[in-house]
Length: 433
Image 1: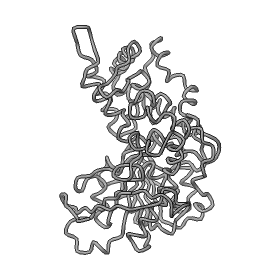
Image 2: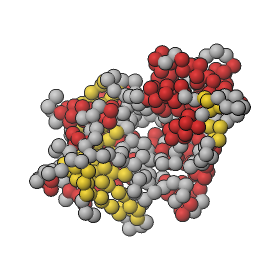
Image 3: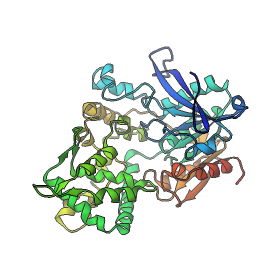
Image 4: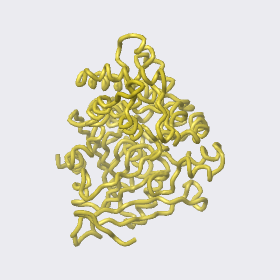
């Protein structure tokens, strides 16, 4: 592909053919896309070391930057950067409600998607690394789920790694999905409490919206059914640096007067749709719980099951009393596959994945304990998406890993901080801080 330009950078598209199943390298092939980014005007581009970026998710394509935005400005100072659309996402071979029927029915789709976890992503990376670098090791930057992938990388192919940087993505090495959500709901509750302390007027606004939806769920133009539970899932915003403010501005414009009385405004419903629809990232929903599965039984809709242990999230009970309606967070439930038209055709497939019990283990504690790769990780204090205690336990289990624990940023700190988080972590990894 011919290079093309944006302000301050030169971009090149790469398309890599990889096996669907790395255990069968001569079998079916799929495509993985990567966007190379280098600083404009550098005469030594070919000699720069590579850094591959693994986005969060699962099921999210690499972020689309314009020029030297956010952490990318720091990375291109001394790296050739590869923004990888992990398998199934972005410009890689897509996996969604439109393409998955080409595989067959739900059973065939579930078997296909079993190859889309961190283990397959890392093996893709290793094939791509050898094609790009001539077998030289590279740096991996893993954000959120990308950090889960980086931890698997350290467990299985450390020879391919020069340095590993993890931001908000140190996973537990042995927690079940139930353990993950049992730790998550108290954090989500704390994020709600902080939001309502900041914006006390939102307590009544959220109750009013929930009461309205309890009487009549809204059907959005794309067919999304906005139920009370779906409305509560807007709490996923509360894990980002400006998420509480975004939620507040949503709620303050929720209603408009009409000839039939107050109604949810078109502007509110459109904004809600943009936050809640999984049309652009269906694998986030379909594969969310399997990223925690390691051969210890099925995940079985863990977030839904564990939620019953936290009755404060029951909106009906809140509306019957005078308590606040609490928002939920990064949790996927069976009802997501009923309300979202992008997910409805995948309901049976998701059920089969939730029932699968033989997922292989993702991490090797013995190899991690003997690690020699420089690793630095940002652990965000009370991160809503990834449990801080789990992350710190894993940090202690990876030999030589250096942590930066901070409450200056939320889960999106590597983006929200400009160049600061990546600069700090590179210095830590290289022994300069």
